[in-house]
Amino acid sequence: MKITSVTTYQVPPRWLFCRIETDAGLVGWGEPVVEGRADTVRAAVDELSDLLIGQDPRRIEDLWQLMSKSAFYRGGPVLSSALAGLDQALWDILGKSLDVPVHQLLGGAVRDRVRVYGWIGGDEPSAVADVAAARIESGLTAVKMNASGRVGRMPSRSETAEVVARLAAVREAIGDDRDVAVDFHGRFGVAAARRIIGELAPLHPLFVEEPVLPEYGHRLAEVVSSTTVPVACGERLYSRTDFLPALQAGIAVAQPDLSHAGGISETRRIAALAETFDALLAPHCPLGPVALAASLQVAFATPNFLIQEQGIGIHYNTDAELLDYVLDRAPFAFPDGAIARWDAPGLGIEIDEDAVREADRRGHRWRPPVWRHDDGSFAEW
Image 1 (cartoon, rainbow, N blue to C red):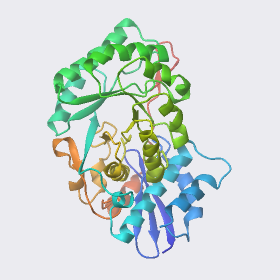
Image 2: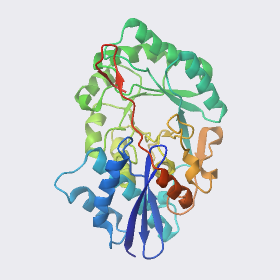
Image 3: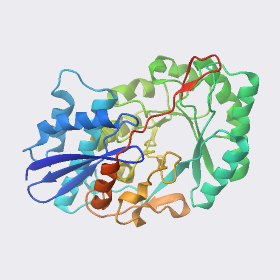
């Protein structure tokens, strides 16, 4: 079997899909994208495709090594994301060629269901409480929220009180039997993060995500050691070597994104590394159906898995929805807050190719918002 073509599709609201075709008629799908940099990653996928055409798609590890290491300059979000989507597609093809799901190829399932959570925002306390209640009503048992909107690196007492009030409102809305995680998005300074996490602790967040920016990872241990609240990070880390310092700092939850961190192959290795530090896996995934399917395949087969993010109904999805690009929506249903394991071959989903091609004709140019403080200086989003 040989790879004959690699095609990319830029689909709203902000995604990029790739399609690998073989001379045996088998097709694999992946989702290589950096949100806000879809055109850039598309070019990187095109460059990497030169290494794939004519190759046997079943030699996944060899092709992963080739794509990740054959150039002198390696790593980073763009190259790792291009590699990630292609890796997903290769695993999809391998599973289909053997008529087994990817999780079977990863050693077999260790669970029957994967608990999932949804994002609910985090601006106005009363509004976020209403959204949280609605998400619970939809079947979820866990949600995630932003700690704040635009804020300074050292927030005032009133701004800190607003952060606590947001979480308190959500906790009251969902009760003590359900979970809420809090995403700091790297918006606070290290000292402020330590102080705010302490004030949030009595409300028992499932975890606090990205309390400091990745470039300040050398200070992450200070945050972890200052609290009993589990600390999570990883959406802006792209390899096991990136995760090692974070795990050594004591994070409780590793959050690689399967569309950024080298795909299924590298995320599986990150999960194994995390297990040696008694850390759990909670893959980041506010993206489309292929990224979610790949994440679930890893979750089905990973012993130290905690919970899976999913983007159905997320606020980014204004022009299109995750389920718009699949022929069968049933696999993504989450009754009682969990997605049941499926055993369809490969990634286990059927992409609506007509819908994808039509979406690609429209394309998108999604960009993250640019925030500024009242004094005109740049603010972290």
